[in-house]
Image 1: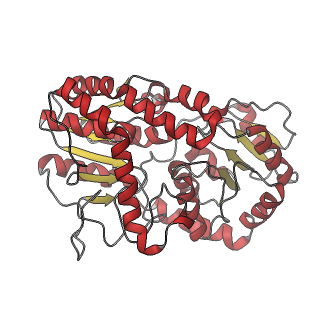
Image 2: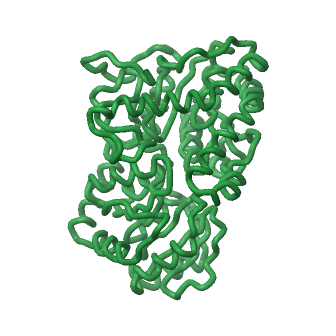
Image 3: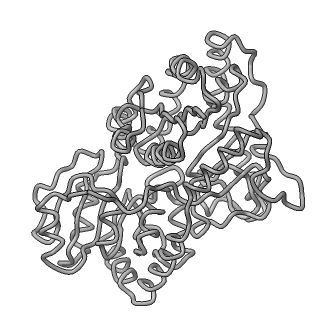
Length: 420
């Protein structure tokens, strides 16, 4: 079968979908990917045909990120609304002749609309739980804001807010590009596949049958990867270092952040990846090595702990490697994953990214060095290693293309619907 995978987001959003495309192609299917140009490296490395959508999310993060999380959120909405019509044209052209569209990220509503126009099965995909549940609050709201009895309404509310933010531009593009009438309400009956590990977030008992927790979407242990010789030499020169990296996050004074982390390390060895923030390794002490982008599945098993921003992908990869985390969330769903890791006992409570505190970091480094924490992380990593999220997702997609309304899981005792 021929499949189009559509997304728009950061590298952490696109990389799992590139892995899904690779798995689909390995199963004999013709899968291609549409995404932001700056995030398509993983697809190309995996041999997945990829094409760029209009816009530049990396430029957005580096420019608007200086205004902090709220500025970035506003800019993401503006980026989506500005490019909705272009994305719709690009998706329509790429989807002709396909058997289904797998749609995700900021382009999710575009994919659903194009699937509607072409009468194709639409399969939602995500690395953040969007299906409301009584078991957790919206990942986009600070955990302390939501009492447990409002868990389910909180996610229904944030889904509606996203819908309202994008609806005007979407309806205009539906009319101009697809000749479709305005969409009056959120889609509720399409399948949702989540590249989320049930070890990190167990599937809620009240989820509907069209929502499936597959497991992390990641290619197995990297083969043929050759690290930079200086990194290899550093790793061999002493005990496993701590990894420090904040991905695409900008808008925080990274020099102040790094100074606090270095001070708290107290001479411990560390590797630092600058990510999209543009900060290099100048002035770092000898115990801290600045590195280029390195596959997490290769690097993390060679570390002692992972200091990160709490993105879904990095949170999963740290746990899959069996390593404790120190999470300094910036925005979005990151506090949610920080809370999940803390609940599992493999991370201390989340630390402030905007006001990094060296004293709190010292306590956090002491926490992740505890024997019981190290052993707990290793055990959970072994549990995750037994999951095959890609195989689960491929089997679900094959079934859905054949029987579009096929249930993916047992129905809960009480009927519920996605994004109600």
